[in-house]
Length: 609
Image 1 (cartoon, rainbow, N blue to C red):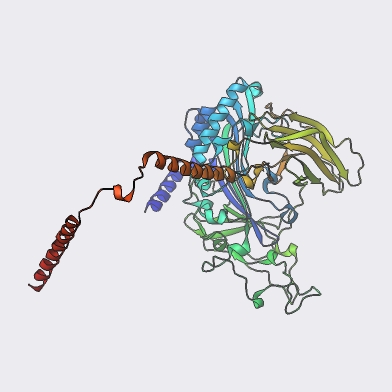
Image 2 (cartoon, one colour):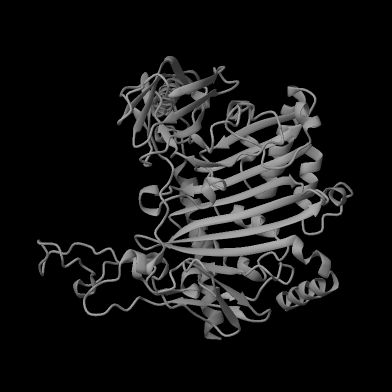
């Protein structure tokens, strides 16, 4: 009943306020990927005028978040919740060119308006504590040791007046250890105008989202100004996930994956070693059949009446050669590029999309181009890992590979390291492996801010380039610090998480280095993150204190008990003790027995009556 009332309320608002309908957009884009993967990108975008926002008239902008931004003096906000690893080798380029991606855990960066750095730090503390309560996350643990001030890596995405550039401070915090779960998804959905009651948000289920191979939730708030129109404050919420089709299509009565029988295995019979007892798995993920209800557990339940009706709610990126079926009340619109199509849904209709298998003639299997759209090649591949051994020193190696045969890639590489990971800057070196032999021009600019023990971490930013068809190895050494025993977490032997490196690829290499200063110059760029690292520090044996406590407690108990008995107890001979009268003992025994016999006798008489 509550759901029906909320739906009619949304319909009433959509008819009573038609002029505001274009202030909210939502769209779901589905893109099949190789190896039985499906990329689902949810995008929600709403805005309100800056004058209405300052007058506390939020319209579609969430009031809970707007009040936090006003109280903390935040002019632009970017928040990321990420989990998993993007497989660039198989899935190609990242969605949104990595602009909506974050490293494993939680990332937050914002531009705050403040007169001094001390005031900016105070507002940053207010912002992190408020967002921690709003999103049920541990953002309040972003202290000075986890906060940096990037110089070259981030640029404002919104339109900020140049007169306020001196009062804008960029702060960046990261929690690589934070576990993203359903408690973060529920507040995310509450920020939407239609919540999870209608539209594409009805497909967002925590069981499906957090069962994905890779997922990222992003929230971006920025001012947008269009010439000739009033400036608006825009909030964009994005959820990207890569689902495993095989795992999503698992029947409900088989929650635990069991190996299929031999006759159901899909084998590559072209292999020379294929036989009755040898099976090489076939790459059949590009030609699988599935439905929207099977992937997300339910069809899309109607459309959000507050959304822009000119934007199709669901789009699917598959070639025109594949047949796609939809439920009743849905109209399919094919794009001119022949690689995608969108679906318009009637207000009261449920949307379900069926993607059947490509039927091939004879035994020839369909090619990749016939079944899915070939993923784009990324501009840069990045890998990062630890080197060395021992508990005292180590090293970090980052492998950067440029797949383009004729285009050079210029980017900004940033690392935010914990204070107990002391790097040796003189060991920083970049070595190229490829046609280019110019080793000195790889790193153009270096910004290094050393760490202070228990006060701030290490900040390292490099502006560098990778020649065409080349691989650059970036390495440096570091020293591990010994912590106090109270600074170790409960699972100290697991290790300490080191935040992912942020790589910002520049389009033209002429953007300047002053990203902390807000300007109106716009330069398109794409981002990518490396994987987080697990650092092993010298860890004491925490079982020894408990062993010492048990041993000393036992020794003290034995010594104190023996001394106490010697001082208090009085030892006498047997004949010196008090005499016990036998007659008194016999009389007491007879009295007790008599009372027992009398009780049992009365009970037997009552039963006979």
